[in-house]
Length: 312
Image (tube, rainbow, N blue to C red):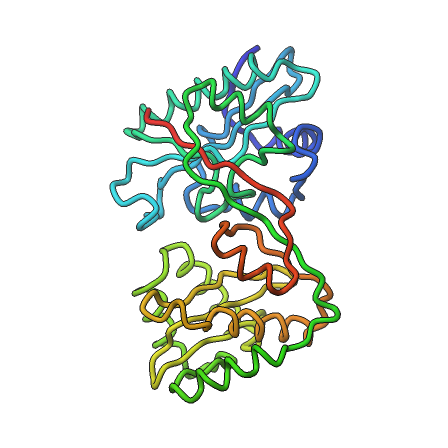
């Protein structure tokens, strides 16, 4: 077995192996280009391929802040990520996967990285971590290689075709309105104060995602109705959005949490998704605390992921 860096000639074989090794997370050429090859930080020397007699038996995608700083996700510039590790089902996961992990860590160290995280790289992750139910052997491999679990993330799904705003939500919204708190559709005139709110209160990656969507809006590829905001007087204090049937991000300023704002915000956003013709809604990444809010609206846990990290 030999390990090489990525070349364009390997793309088709990577996608084929991806679907065989990680069947729940198969991707298309378009997604591979947008999230990997066109990522501002893409480095072919950290997309490693394991080959036996020219047969691709495994690969690992590594990422780090090569060109674009990652803000609060990498404040010292010393963090690296493994977003995907795949080994052909007929090959030895321990041998092939272990060799790929060893080599990618070696390359990260040579770049001055002191920590490696699996697998939520902010600009281009595929899943929050490793699916503990579907890919238990992969999880065991990382743990045997010194990676320590530090968080669990959930994916949740709901049918919204019969969704209606409840009397309880309407009453809560009326109460908030009496306190000067409004839940409404985003307006183009909100742009500057919306960005200010995001930059002051939300994580760097959420700001990046929203800037991308606001640019798409100016080009006709995103609509005001896809963003719901919460205002207090003239300030924005919360928001959520949807893209297709994908719900999120979703957040309320810490100062205003615990007042039922999130419940109303979530309900109104789901209402707009239904009005847009969507029958289902899904959340890729949430936690057990937020899951209780989602659960009120029919969301059920579909997958649970383990996030891991290691000092290099």
